[in-house]
Image (cartoon, rainbow, N blue to C red; front, side):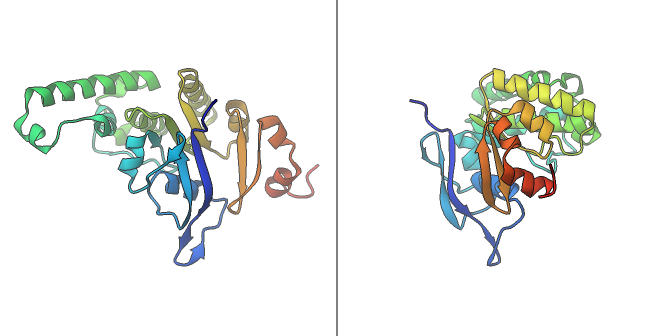
Length: 237
């Protein structure tokens, strides 16, 4: 029997007493990745309640994410950005870092090797020593994914990864996500690019002002009257 990997039940979030509006996609992401405290509901991950005390705790549990607005350390190299992500899986503490013990040095070397592997995986190994702020927009998106992968996630949550991309960059992103899926990683995608969503996803959920109005296979969602009305207007044939 397969266990549902991630389940959000009756999640509610208010800001200053006002219920969150808009579609609610990013707000939901921010709740189950520990950025926003929830006002109601619960999140289950891998068949057990998920502690949402902090983003670090959520990452340690096996959920990694990217952001709608890229959040990289611009004055650090691409490799250093990925290495930062890897530290959620390391053991060396403060004293090990200060004393530079043999174990700490070995662990740091392993982090660097893993960082190199992930930069190669996402296709930007040749930019490893470039500052993140000097990378192209598409490469910054790839770097953010590499940093998320450094946490060894069970679930990768991508918040509008194709936003601002041109057609060539979007095609490359699709190939990368397809590769992630083939390698066994579960991907949860927020995206407005309908063509990308319909071509990638096994199941699609549609939110409208915080309410789920459809969830099904892509073909069924595309033909759903509620989805057509909400996103295309009632006059659309």
